[in-house]
Image 1 (spheres, rainbow, N blue to C red):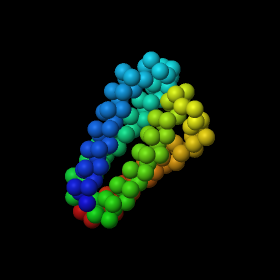
Image 2 (cartoon, rainbow, N blue to C red):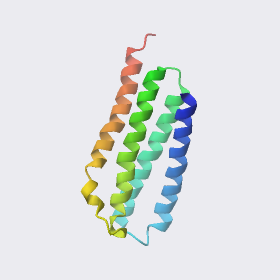
Image 3 (cartoon, rainbow, N blue to C red):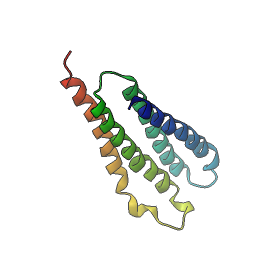
Length: 128
């Protein structure tokens, strides 16, 4: 499980770096400065959670079953939160109106908070 979590963290990290570079250089000419800042928010949260998964995958303080739960919540959360922000911030570039799916962003935020909460509860329930 740890190997899978760390590999997922690496994928989230590398794609966050690539998207961050794209946002900083490629998008500035295509979307408004406010939209670029919104895009960067998605990148930040993606990289934060890549680091979060690196911690989870690298610690023995978390039970294997809990790690699996955290991985699922984090991946789903990043997808719903960050990916929806990427599409919403670039909405002007597409003929499809992604604002219809704006509700996905806060759901992603709740999933990410749930992952952190599961980690917290696992740690405080753990016997010393």
